[in-house]
Image (cartoon, rainbow, N blue to C red):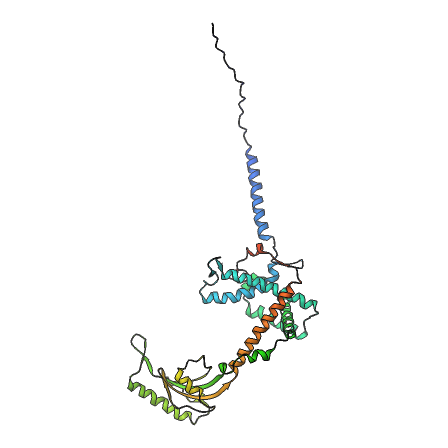
Length: 362
């Protein structure tokens, strides 16, 4: 049987030649992409994003700059004390939250607080008095001419008109806040009754002092020897004799005296630099009496009791307790007030802000 070989014919493949792209097309395409990129960057930088919205009204950074400046300047004071390291101190290791983050939250809260309370004050018919307007004018002039640097004024965008407006707001807010607190009927006497007078009883004194310590070769404080202590005693004793006959102790010590010092002081039982023994002796003194020469490990004293029952520290403690109660009560009132407003904080806009660099000039 004859076998014949069959050939299989495949269809011819059409070879396509690569098309050449006109260089002009590449140039145009690249140009379009670059323009689009630049445009998006400019839009991103120039498009104003509101920080807060209240009842549909948008507040931008320039509207809130004074509130941000107030927070930034107070935190920057500590930043300078810490040698420029304060802003970035981490206060929560689990989240990485820093002082800068806390300051931003405070600036936003302060802005919302003032603008909400201002709206409520206006709604209740509050207006600036002539005296308030005059004070605001003086404060604005002081800010522009004395307190604010040219760099801060320029960076924050502060103008006389803007500062007049924002200080007008904060003035009404403070008056509205105080009126609200007064209406809360906080019992000041009940708060006062809870504070023990004896715990904060203040003793006002004046005294002469001479040290019985000296520095050794390494600058370390060491006790004087008996001869030196005796000389120190004799010196303060000479002033003690004069002190008993002198009404104004500020005139006792001549300018050339280097060892004996005169000082006015006040203390309460739990807060004094005197030793326990010396403290007990002084606290037992009657008003307008002069002690004998008293000694502790640091030196010799001659003390005159001015007032052994001063209320100054007690009054301060009472005032602080009342203010704390008022702030707590007003905070509750403010939280209730917030429920009457439709407000929103734009967190995406906040991510662009870096506290310490917003209103403060380099």
